[in-house]
Image (cartoon, rainbow, N blue to C red; front, top):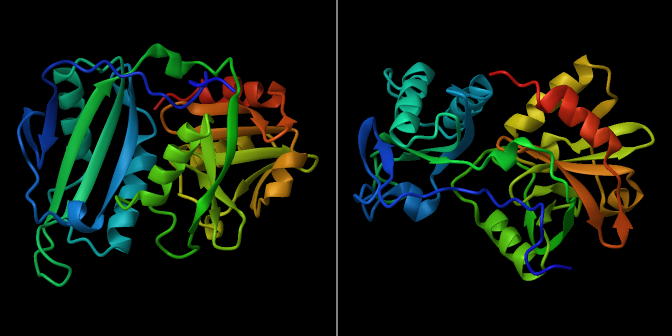
Length: 296
């Protein structure tokens, strides 16, 4: 396999010497320190994040992102200020994208975290950070070279209330991404506590079998991906056979096609898992029919 696999999840950013960020509603340059040593997000992973695509001045699927973020904050018992609202965040994100010159095509990371101090301290003040970078236009095309993927062997995701969150505690996925790089793979899949497929280092997974498309259910420990949710809804509406169920390693070897999904690329088709090679005819059709038609 190539040492630098083509078609992978490499987001092509164009960093400038001085970028801008938004911290708790205040615009500042990215070279200024903003987090204290006692920050709970830094110390404990006590936070959430959203990765949002900016395109032609609009935040794609922002209602999905904000719904997931608010649900996650409520699940984690954040004290949410009254003025902290989706409309406010949307305006600040767009303002930052303009400052960073990435309104045509950009990647936004919105992080929320809880105060400063120890595990039992009373400071539960919500803080947030917005970052934004330009993206290369290749993210708007279905990958020509299929992904080569494998299984990350060293971690198991728990199947609990928190497994579906986009948590700041990202260690299993960080190590899965590192494993993929070491093995010269484009991505690696993370298993749950039962040995079934949960998701990949930065994406959800869909496989095509005789009965139709399958993606792991949330009870299998996968992240509740925004693109996953959108695809499930749109595929059902447009007549595709798709369901949420258990996916085992053997199912990958028996699949006709596989693709991975996330909010930036939409979907990427998988060419190979182990010795099994897949086509992409149905994946390409889903990309044309559903992903390319996203308008907001």
